Structure formats: structure tokens, C-alpha cells
Amino acid sequence: MSKLNKSGETAVQASMLPVYIVSVATFIIIFQGFMVAPLLPMLSEQFGTTVRHVSFIEPAYLLGYGLFTLVYASLSDRFGRFRIIVFSLFMFCLFTLSTAFVNGVNQMIFLRLLTGIGAAGVAPTTISWIGDSYPYEKRGHALGVFFGAMAGGTAFGATTGALITSLIGWQWLFAEVAAIGLAILVLILMQQKNIFGKTKAAVKKRDNIILSIQSILSTGRAKRTYLYVMFNGMFHSGIFAWLGYFFYKNYGLNEFQIGLALLGYGIPGLLLGPLLGRLADRYGRNKIIPVGLALSGITVLLLSQNFSLAASHVLVALLSLGFDLSHPLFAAIVTTFSSKKGIATGLFAFSLFTGYGLGSLVLSLIVNIGLDSAFQLFGASILIAAVCSIFVFRNEK
Image (cartoon, rainbow, N blue to C red; front, side):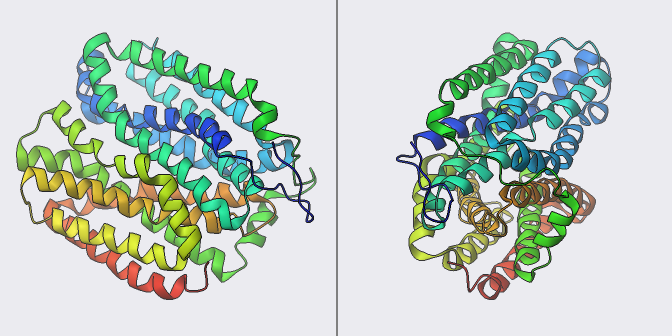
């Protein structure tokens, strides 16, 4: 399905079908990441401990995921995208299934750490593969599909996870997610030639990952882009982490209703991801990125005004749209930093998940000024970043 162009790089795939197939793996991984949060009160009762104790299952997962993206990045350059995606997805399935059989919260925390470590290779390696397979002027469409799958996992994880748990229990939820992951793994194995062709690893074994990272970060363009990736991740993670409490405090919603309210966060990316990617390819990332950042900031400032429940549902969807108009575009830019795309996208994933952790932490530290005031501070900060981005990304196409 793929062929090499004159420069030796893989030419654009005949269709977007390979992207959809590989992106489904990221969907199920993000799904299981977001399905855990609504389960914390129930798990604390079952394990006879505090919600605070159980809550460590989330940072354990994010810590393992974030730190090991750089490890998989180097390995995917050395040993090929296919091998790393298959290995990482298999480990994800194994540890997710094992979590269904834990009998204590500490065991679950440990297995969530291992799950994050196992799953960390799929998303950054997929971005690297897209960079290998699609030219820059078409890459926005492919990345739009990928981030649409990520948005879909975000949208349905909390809601569907809570619903399934209420019907069959959390143990079967983990077992079913592992089974779905295994089915996706089998599909990728069956479609190996159609998806990955005969592309080979780009980096020789003697290359040093530290030196490669230093080389990528030696340019101001790379430093500024990764900084925006981290800051945008901080903004969206901090706001999303407190949206559940926002709906509980202001509208008295229960856990399942909160899940439905948060469903809108991923819908725009799921439905419009490919279209938004094509817009970036056509009109330029330098024009779309400031719009996405500004939309995010304005949305959060409006949320802090506590309008009607229906209006807040719409604003949550618009907040998600702001993410979809910025983060996939950053990913496309990152793939141009080096021929060692695995390391470049590994830095992207590392920056993103570091931002996720810092964002929720920072908002938690300042929330004593009031949730509305904290939202306003975050919203004003991203608006300033939006204005600066006009100049930072003015030369991006």
C-alpha cells in the first residue's frame, strides 16, 4: 500500500484506513485511562480505605506512561514502529486483565503503574508512523483521525465506564477492555503488510537517545513548540480534572450525570478530527493554532460565569474543540524536527503527560481561591498564550 519517494521517505498511504486501524488502539488505551476516575468512591468502599488512598491509581498510571514514552520513542526508531506498537499493546492487555483480579488497593496502584508503562508506546509510536507515512501537507488529516480517536476515548471513558460498572462490576469492566485490546492487536497483526509495509527503523543502534534529544532541543523552534505542548496540556488537564466537581457544585449532578456532561468534551474531536486536520493542511497551522488556544480560554472564562446547565454542556464541547484545534497541529509540527521521529514524538508525549500531571496539581493548589476564580486564572493565562502564539508560530505552514 505504500511506496518510497525519491528522498527515500515513505509516500502517502492510498487511504486513511490504516490510520483508523492503528488509532483504535489509542482509543481503547485512552478509554481505560479515563474510565477509572468515576470508580474512586466505589473502589474506596470495596477496599475499605479512603478515596485519597485510591486516587493514587491515577498518578501512578500517568507517571508510568509519561516517563516511558521516551524509552519507547528510542526503541521504535531502532526496531521499527510495528514491533513497538504490538509489544506495547500486548503489555497493556496483560496488565489491564491482571487488574481485574487484584484484592487490595496497593496491588491496583502497582498494576496501574505497570499498565501505564506497558501502554506508553502506542500513541507516540503511532504519531511517528504517521510522520513516516504521510507528507507534511497531508499529515494534518491523518493526525486529525488519530486525535479524534483520542478524543473519543476521553469522551466515552468516564461515561461508559461508569455505566458498565453499574451493570456488571468493575472487574468485568477491566476484563472487557483487555479483551477489546486483544482483538485490536489481532487486527493489527493481520493487517501488518497493509499498514506498515516494508518500512524500516531509521536510527542505528549506536545512536544515543540523550544526544538525540539534545540535538532536537537545540533549536528555538523545538523548544517553543514543546513548551506550548506542555502548557496546553496543563491547561486542559487542570480544567478537565475539576469539571466533574464543577457540575456537582453548581448543578447537583450525580456521578453518572456528570459522566454524561463530560461526554461532550471528546465529541468534536471524534466527529470533526479529520476535517479539522484538513483545515490545518489547507490554511496553515500558524492561523489555526491561535484560534484553538483563544477558543479554549474564552470557553473557560464563560464557564466560570455559571450559566445554565445546557449552556455549560455546550461550553464543554467548545473547550474540547479548542484542544482539537491546537494539539494535533503541535504534533504535526513536532514530526518535522528530526528524521528520528520516534524520539521527537516521544518528547511530545512526555511534554503532554507532564503537562497533564502539572495542570491538575496546579489547579488543586490554587482552588482555595474559589473554583470560578481558578478557572478565570487558567482562562486568562491561555488567552495570553494565544496572543503570543501568533508570533511564535507565524512561520509554520
